[in-house]
Image (cartoon, rainbow, N blue to C red; front, top):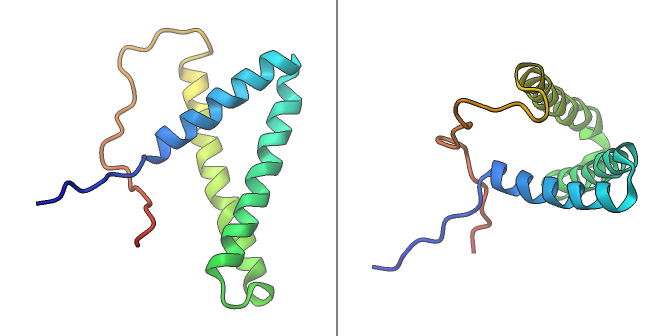
Length: 108
């Protein structure tokens, strides 16, 4: 029986982007510049994702824009609440669980 390769979770992928953002923030000494770069990169990649998944992006553009915007808003809301509860540098009693997170893998 072959061992099935598991893909990275969304949290593991996000952690890799955050590590790079932290590195760039130290290098550039400008967290706002890095945040803007990440948002721009996310928007470019999400536009590419929408283009790949869509059969008619021109017709589906408004729906894609609404869907991605809502996804981002929900994620930002969750993370803002997290930083309110645990400001940067605060100790956490328990770490977030990664159980039940959907993974996205490319089927071959």
